[in-house]
Length: 448
Image (cartoon, rainbow, N blue to C red; front, side, top):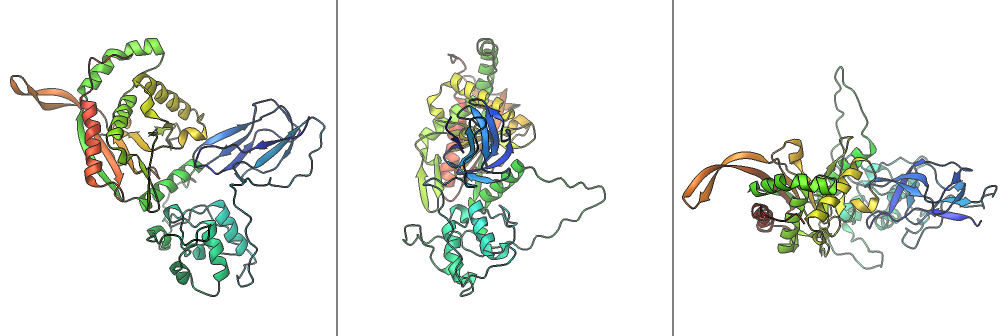
């Protein structure tokens, strides 16, 4: 058989690269069609790459720990006894891949031993694998890299930024470089933007004092990613949170009435989460300016309503699978989608595309017994809602015979939003509208 390249697959609209974490097959091993060959990890999820053909693994083109661009070949599969044709360590990149780094200019001082630069600096600034590679090749230390003005999302240093900086090393200070307008890839001048706070180096971090009996445990990969995303979100968006208490007595009564029938018919439980998502979707249709993203000084109005639902993993970490086009589902469809994504999240079976593309996020802090929370926005979204625990409370209600005190089921909704583009009026009206839809839920509603 002809030799076939195993390609790093596309894994969602915002995923451009993945790290090889574990080869499941060795050179010479027999591989079946659709059999998993290698485990990979993105900044969103762990996954496996299945074989697109049957045969023998002739050659692995990358080692564990290598970062590979989407579209690159990662292995060669052929017939048993076939010798692998001479293959470069990395297959040619696709048209969307970054071009090769320019050779160092004479004026750029190069260190004989380059400093290893981490993905995230102590100041919380993120550096892509390509930028780190260029910096290490050119001998740019982390403290110097921190001084380069970043024109990417959230103040990130892009390939263009660092390549524009290299020819000027030794001729001008980093401050002068900051004053120069960065050029876009088409040679035109980028719009002037206010430098983000993340471009200012943080003070030197003081070592944490250890005490007797302390144990040092390194963060796992997912916890490091979560930590980076949370810090980046806080640096990017000025968070404001509005709160509303909602009377959800009708929803509790309705669910108690239908849950046994639903479980008998569908062999799964109906929770409150799909009802919350349904109300959020209705409110988004009323206030579409919540369903947006920010790109620099531009606002992107989203056509699709893709609701992320935060799910706790057995490890204690957090992942956010996304229900795409949630407005196209009825309540039964939303229930099935919620249960399916939650179950596969707990079993580490989500695909990368299933945790990307969210336009608004819901997190249920009430599942841990909390009455409210102040959630952090999932970038580049501009809002997130936390729903608290449902509690029985005495409340004043209106009756035909006048006001009365009754026992009601109530909960708090916490709506955090990006104050750059969402003002208090919109943020407050949106969460109030969600509460209205929950309170107006029809207790006599048919399940099907």
